[in-house]
Length: 251
Image 1: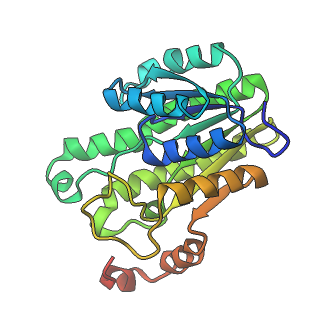
Image 2: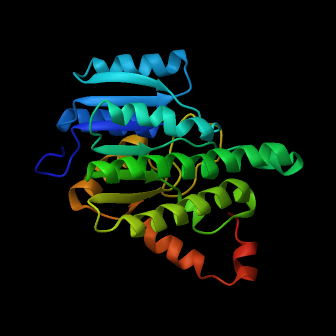
């Protein structure tokens, strides 16, 4: 169960090598979290991440999970919930893709969409059903400001995040009043391995800053979290720009 401040004692991370997810796990372990499940493709990176979290005092287990194998999600994630209640699920997997390459390779573009959207719909619904069955818990979904309005530079990634964001909002409405809390997190440009080598955008942030925003959002039982917070106003303005004007912006 969550503590008096709304922070989880048990955590399931979907995307167990995500830098944002691991920063969040570290922050929560420093508060109250004692049990962590890291779900991801089996790899030395997943094992190393688990070992580092164990060094912080948590009981950490790994589970083989593939966003691109939705047929296995119910069985794989069901086994985690069968071990005991999960206070928080952090849906943190995703891929940026390569816009220029993916425009020329439809199958690569589909893989981005399947990872970021289809896989998230499947895993999100499986976890939401399990959280509802236990009567409590939070589902935290890492979206992106890229989903607010598709940009020429990354519209394949942005469109997949737009779908994920809309799905998570709708799921939150569907679960309202059930004891299950859905929180959508919309970071801007985050300095991670995934964005290494890309031109840094204004208002860039870090995994640790996103983790801090997630913690604050949990305490407040927020439904939407922007990181940094000023992006909320920036994206509101960009979202309402006439298309002809937006098309000419260097974004």
